[in-house]
Length: 283
Image (tube, rainbow, N blue to C red):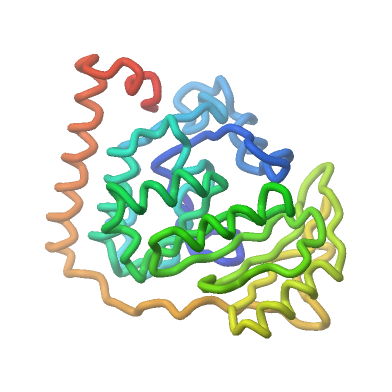
């Protein structure tokens, strides 16, 4: 968890799931994997198991402990809609977002079909929340563009695109029913280049469609060197956030205890070996 995230388009990160697997070219230089694998084998470290998939029930309570409203990137170090993540656990994550509704949550996935199906099924209640934004990654034409169509089919109050890392010119994209677009280049060692024309095209399409456009970075091996200005200025537009005060400390304390009980129940189920496969996923 990070209460003060370095990610330009969010305030904090919340990781009740850790670890992931690669499924498309955008995953090639995954920053989360690079970070996590540095600590593989370090006893008691949060990433002792590297980037292996792990559920972290004791993290469920975190948003309830933050009294001031934040934008929260959900699972910056994972993907909530991996098939091995039990849907009842995802439902608990959504229930926390329902209770801690003074925050705005940003849920991002490359597994667009799984998110669409879940929000049409057991998670239907969560798709209606205006304070939860549901997004897909779009890195190229082959893998990324189809996710936009699937996102449009998804029952969600707010939909967004994270076009990062942008690996090629996407051409004209259909922005109907899309509420926000983030664009950024790849950063770090071996970063693949991004051309200015690709970014301008997306900015201009967003302006024409009336969709908020956020340019995160040019990227490169030293992203700070290239910065994040496009044509002489930064682009920081976002959807309007709902402004809601946090409940009283006593009310939050009651909610915190309820969520902690959820966590204990989830761990107890695995510990009793009622679900051995689940037990292997617990941190």
